[in-house]
Amino acid sequence: MNSASVSKPVFRSPDGLPTDICIFTITSEPRKDTKNKSLPERKLKILLIQRDPNSDRFPGYWAFPGGFSNEHETLDACAERELREETHILNENVHIEQLKAYYTPGRDPGGWIPTVAYYALVNEKSLSGFKADDDAVDARLFTVEEALSMKLAFDHNKILEDALKRIQEKMLQTNIAKEFLPEEFTLSELLQVIETVVPTYTVDRSNFEKKLVGTKTRKGIIEVARDSQDRIKYSNEYSQNKAKLYRFTDYVPFLTIY
Amino acid sequence: MNSASVSKPVFRSPDGLPTDICIFTITSEPRKDTKNKSLPERKLKILLIQRDPNSDRFPGYWAFPGGFSNEHETLDACAERELREETHILNENVHIEQLKAYYTPGRDPGGWIPTVAYYALVNEKSLSGFKADDDAVDARLFTVEEALSMKLAFDHNKILEDALKRIQEKMLQTNIAKEFLPEEFTLSELLQVIETVVPTYTVDRSNFEKKLVGTKTRKGIIEVARDSQDRIKYSNEYSQNKAKLYRFTDYVPFLTIY
DNA sequence: CCAATAGTGTCTGTTAGACAGTATGAA
DNA sequence: TTCATACTGTCTAACAGACACTATTGG
Image (tube, rainbow over all chains, first blue to last red; front, top):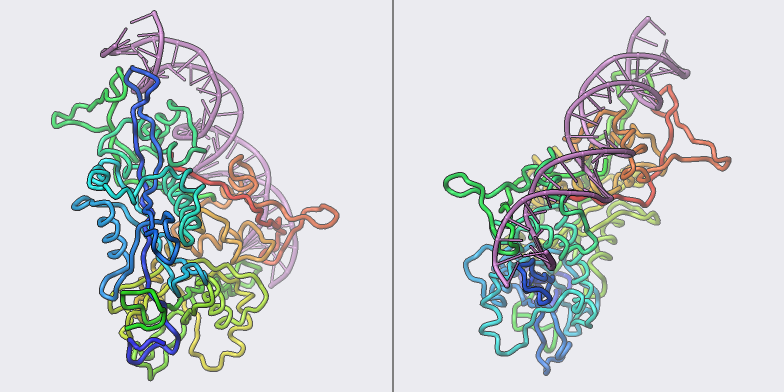
């Protein structure tokens, strides 16, 4: 029985309401099989933490970072707090959104504990401080394939599947790709990010370009980056040949099946 | 303080975890300004219930139906239970999905009570039993415009806005229109349902038809209804001229901005 | 000159969207 | 005959997608 609130619940109350955060990032590593400038290998990864080996619930299992919310904060605030605690991201904006609430009897052997799951997209660069002070190695990035094949704590496998599906949809219908890219990027980088999150998505590079910069409905999603003299900016970070730099605008077309 | 679970929360616990359901339906009434057969007037409506005038929280305010979940059921099950209790829908399938979880300090003056909001789409016909045994008139359908302009209980205005936005998106990207239509329907009915939920969506009727039955990517969303002799079925319910009947398939194209 | 990327050009069939026009059948 | 719907047809510009091609430049 719960004695907290004076006039309310005739029902028993949950034993706590935590938030759990699926933190996605894309890591990029230089290709090893060539010495020319080339696009890096990118991988979609997810941050997991290993539970206390002495816990009475899922000891030693890997799980999403998270923690209990309290009466004086919103769920969003709780999730963001947990995110920043875990990643040591301080001032930058982070993209974090609620996925959904989960409860199935028995999901937590510790009692009646639903969870509100969030997903966050963080840039590899923002995560640079992460590995540094992480001696404990009880927090690690796993590729989503690895994570999906593991037996995670609680119902976190289900949550991961849902979160992955959600970010794949969002990747193709919104401009969240920008969370994984620098402010200014080349078309090849953008395409690579999309393909990393949604491996089933494939297009001809040249058609991709035409569509994104040349068609009425898509034109405006991205625009070419220009310097203070209004000259088009280029990069040759990933190729000998210089590539135009682009940036996202706020425009996102809405598509309908009808 | 909470004494329910032995080993768990060092934190205080919520005072309950209810679900609230946004029940949408489309009502249709014959046009009054003509005597010819014509398409009905359709309106998107939402089911609200009036709170006890003696409640200490939002007395007399209108609110979404809902109620507390318990430890032994999933959130989905709780929501569906509440939905059926309120609408007296018994055996039929209903479309109900989680919207998201809400908590802001003070949203419920009664304590620390988050809510998990759901939205449900029910067919006018399934709701026929609703008005019948409803003498109390403490439950009513409001048009969304009405509801949006009212001051609802708790944070239900915000929830309604989110739910409306969600079903508008889903209406244009999935085949949820079928929840508001009979098994077999005419193209005009379908178009009318879409326009009722998303007033900003407008297309030429004839282009709508071509797109839906004539183009590669859209073809297959709906198919013509045929009788046992494989003859195309027609209806003249809404017009002198007979109209082909269609049904939804399971195919829904996925669209991308890239 | 090769590798790896950046980008242009071209071609065909498809599609979007505007709009005109014909058909049906009850009142 | 009119009304409200059901449908077909036509035209143009735009688009999708395949694929061939040239350009750049560090090593």
